[in-house]
Image (cartoon, rainbow, N blue to C red; front, side, top):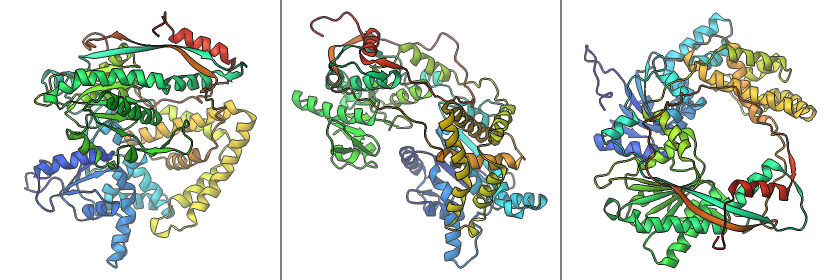
Length: 604
């Protein structure tokens, strides 16, 4: 609101519009609610909660404060053309260039990929279009105006001021929004904890270890692919009814005995699961155990899409179905009420979710790096009656959690600078491979960068036709030498990562880089996947013999001592190809038992 009402020495508004952007619907709703608390005047603040057309209209009318998700920007240009057409005008699909302040929440995740540059293209307006037009005329390539516009949108633009906020910056965040890799202002996790703006989520941290022994239950001893079979055994254990039942008992009893009495009897808990099927099984297990015990606890579950359970062919599960009709949009509000106490999640609500009543987190998922910090930080919100938090972790090592938090405790620092010459070296390798030809790049880009007014339904077919020869050559190479083909795929991804990042901080004038970037982005999606190998399921071949769930540590994880690791920039990626290692199932079971075994007794 201060930005929207800011005036210069000549009493002119500094910004025509302030645009608050996030990349998640949950965050978007929370931001909208917060900003609406400040300002209710009609026409001053507009929530974009319907469509990209609504966003196009708000931008065209220069609404002072606009709140929207990042994902609507790629469609704004087409909506501007439609609006002009409805008025009987011949539009260009661009806005008049205005001065905009762009406030980005959770900036570490909001500025990756093409959607972020689409935002800059839309807000760059006519000025960006004119710049591209001049460049095209200078190079004698009027047909490539869209190409030069695509290049221009990546860099800094004089009419845009970005204000990026994040507690967990990545290397890219500091490089793109910082000054020489340093943030303009830093309010560290340590300071926020000391000033009691957030709580220290590592103060009460308890870890459990799961020990077990498996038995081969089949007569034969088949050879299995080591890595995939080991993953299948891990899945067998994670989803085993006894494992889920034991952990459910620990979690529910802790909630009943401790958590429910916190925050004036209003405390809530989150269960972080490792997969959507685990979330389904835990939800069923929680509800069953709570009913058996007669506890006044109700749970909700959050996961995307539809889940199939291989134990029950033909049965499917959805979030809405398991929550008895509560919609995805209603869920955060319902969880706030006193009716519900526990939220079980699978890849949802682990970032940006703001719920001060959340006191306890039960973790049954491997967490590392920034994901560990973001997930556990859901507990750090303050509340007048909230004195502490509690984490019960079934999976992660205390030292790994400490290292993850240490990076951000005093404020993250950038590591070694990314060397732009690496990108050119990778481009040289890709060009020399013969997978794609220069004329195919040119043919693809001639269609891709056609002005929007001249685009037709046949363009998609023409672009596919330009990509198909490269796909065929890659397929042949994959059959001849899978290692080499996967290495090439890795280099494609490395080039996309490096150019996508470097083009935001270095004003490249080389249109060949942009052409190749666009081609490879589409080619990568069409390349045949590598063979995944056999899929194992050991429900009949393996049996759980012994099981023990044991508390191994409790207390505070201190962040005071030791050096913090610096943030790494975009790096080259390998092929990720691991040669199959056949091993007898019995031998693999012995290895797993050695790793997860202990001195069992009859009680186990």
